[in-house]
Length: 110
Image (cartoon, rainbow, N blue to C red; front, side):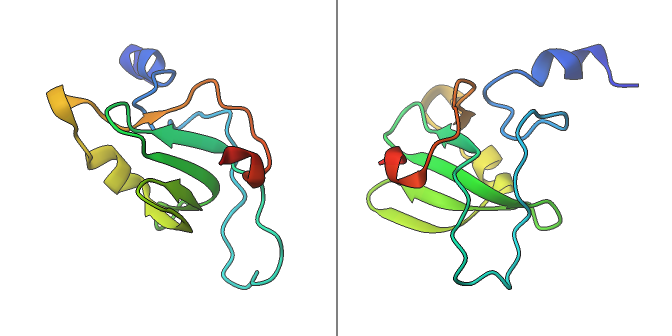
């Protein structure tokens, strides 16, 4: 049985990937080379800067997302859930999951 604390925390924005999440990510497969990537299922952002991460696939074994990162430049690639959780900004701010994100085509994310 889950603790009462976990139930309160699963809806908070700083919990990047809660265990019981309404978000479903397609599992990353290395064999898919030319097939189109799915639309981003979730968005993460840095409240103290303009960085945004759009996740479209997730590998739960390696805890890696595949998606687009918009920071100093725009690039597609992999980013780690563990690294997102470790980042701390001014005053202890953390990377947050956009709780109001609705999936949309990647071209609309820019």
